[in-house]
Image (cartoon, rainbow, N blue to C red; front, side, top):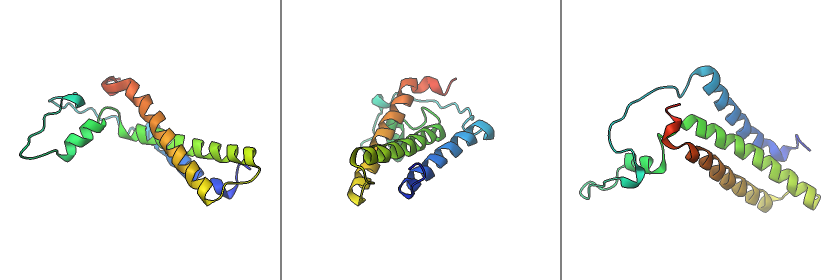
Length: 133
């Protein structure tokens, strides 16, 4: 049941998350210290009406740059792999058969949303202080 072919996408995503974590641990990636000057509060972003909203303003509002992106991706990939595998096994235990195409799609979307919400909330708790650690 653990190595059933239905779990292959989740094993691949879990492997990508683990490789990103290993890259951070052994590769010294994400350790660059960059000092940026300017407004760092995403809720107080000034928009020039003549230019409109720039791509960097949107990224800043989304929280990019507050925590190392590679750690956020590693956490989200790992959570997606584990949650997808868990929901597949839970479906099998409750129904007695593996999910079909519709069930697999629902499981994949549910696992993706839960992984993004959980991973984002972990890093939201750190805020801007995480980069200073």
